[in-house]
Image (cartoon, rainbow, N blue to C red; front, side, top):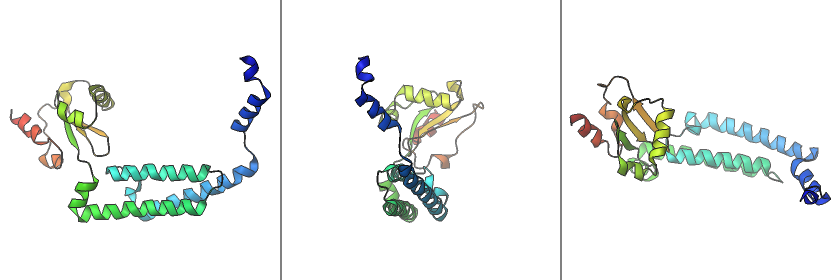
Length: 197
């Protein structure tokens, strides 16, 4: 076994894997700088929404931008023009979708998931938790992240459209959530029924 690890072939393979030639670093550096500048310029043009996670579409575009950056910068023969074009198209798609979503509610219904009410007080809404593809252990982890110490602190927990989990909690047991904050939330009527009950 030791002979295999120290063989000339293995040594050469490790050398090739862990080293590079200076001639290869220059195109990577130039491509990285150019792509970085492109992202900054496009972000300035597109605005603060560029890397937000306001919708599932925004999150997908953010992941795609990262993928384009990584693949262009680290490719053996960097295609800078292709990378810049891909970024321009992704930012344009995001801006276009944002405009369509704001002007046509039907587009928003098609493109976006809806948030779900997955917990009211100490009561887990098991059907909504299941539809959000979460387990109770996932939920407990999110409650710990939100610094919840007792179930009595919890007002409500939501699975947001981006996959994030929002925990509304308060030490004041009489605090209530404004109805406007529940608009568009699946199973939000349960919160009102729970309060009346």
